[in-house]
Length: 416
Image (cartoon, rainbow, N blue to C red; front, side):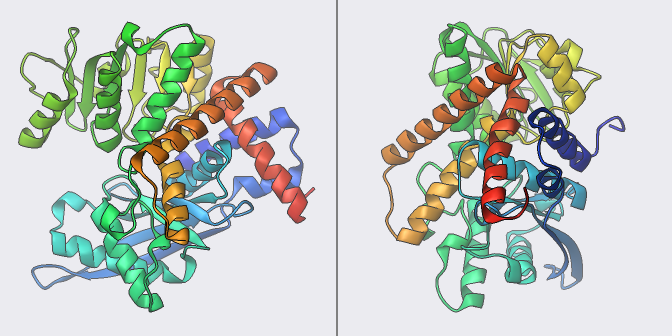
């Protein structure tokens, strides 16, 4: 899609917009526009056939004024430096908007993990940790899972870091299996957070889940659990999609049965009794709630006018371009931006990190209650800023987050 904005430029544009509204000091504005550090590494991996293949890897660290860097690692063929930097910027504001003591970080490896064996994945993951070892740690930078990375990959990475340090260090990575220091509720946290913000948006409109139809683009971890949760709350799930295409049934789907079909066939496409649609068509369906849970840049100025959903809950990072945001706002769409709606994952990652550092572990109920409290409080704060400045919710989320970052920078003597 050639009309897509470079993700780094898109992130900077969002910062510039918020800075202009706040009248932000030039020094603080400039610091926020750029990452503090970007590490590019080459990772040689011995493949199963005995050959050596070199993979490109990245780790971007944005601003650490509030605490150590925090953010995911993705394994995807399209991972590149600009995308990694953009995602690190978004992570800073995501942490800021929900009040976490973190700065933004992001990393990734340019690869197709579906083409790698389990052994090759493990050697690649350990090689990546060896390459970025000097800049990560529980007090420096705490990676986590993202696109096509799993709790098992996080376990290998934590183990590699621990071996390099010479002692067990579970707090270096979050999103681990529970048996090696992971938190209960982490695998469902992104979807849980998104659904909480949708719940609060519906409340503000005098509605409930039982009155709405939902379409979800992306049926991976976040997409499936979002489908599960809205279904359990009484919403009608009428469309879902994955990278191969989508399905539509106006009578609604059982998310578990769709997931079983995907597990068997590799895609939601050709689900019995459903009409096949494209990902592009899904975005333009006449539904009440749209949840983009795939990759960035899918709602653009080219298709925003055709979006009919009344609420958009962004479970993915950066699915909407700035030009599309303007169109959606003018059309009265209630946007729940990624830095708010998808913050559940990093909140429970924070809970996991706290549990690792204290060596005291919480129950599922404790995690759920604390996550709901943080997401609900963040939604209400952003909604209040939106009303105060008469701006859309994404801009309001940036304003809320940047105010917190700016205050910390001034107090630490960085600027202002």
